[in-house]
Image (cartoon, rainbow, N blue to C red):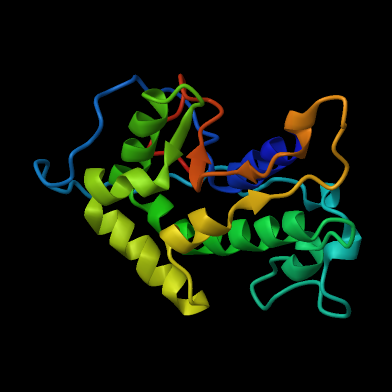
Length: 195
């Protein structure tokens, strides 16, 4: 369960932290003309002091545009749990492959709608293959840079518990995860605001 929460937490990087939205039916990109709307970016002043300084690249803490540079490989490491490290790396690559899409209001609305129809407030990215094949293909194209696809990620998102409680045999079972986007504020999420 701890690893599930950790995995969901990593997806919160691309989850929706915006305001006011009503639940709608899933957007069918094939029947709705694309309406390009500009997303308002209002969350850029989040204090960076909360991020561990040890995760910053040594001797080069800021890029040319003044943004901090982080050592994501270091952030993903877990010498005590190889499967957790594998999951962290896969989720980071999935986040990078999906990040360009969150600038698309239609994609954001689709994710909100899918999450609204889910018991876990999560949009399963594999469902995009049928719901929105253009987005599905774009994510897979972005993942191909790493030699990955959504299907390969799904097959690899497994975790073998390292310290099961033998009084409860289910704690020793292999855990399976699904590549998805969790929307923590589903009732308020606005697809036109910065995720």
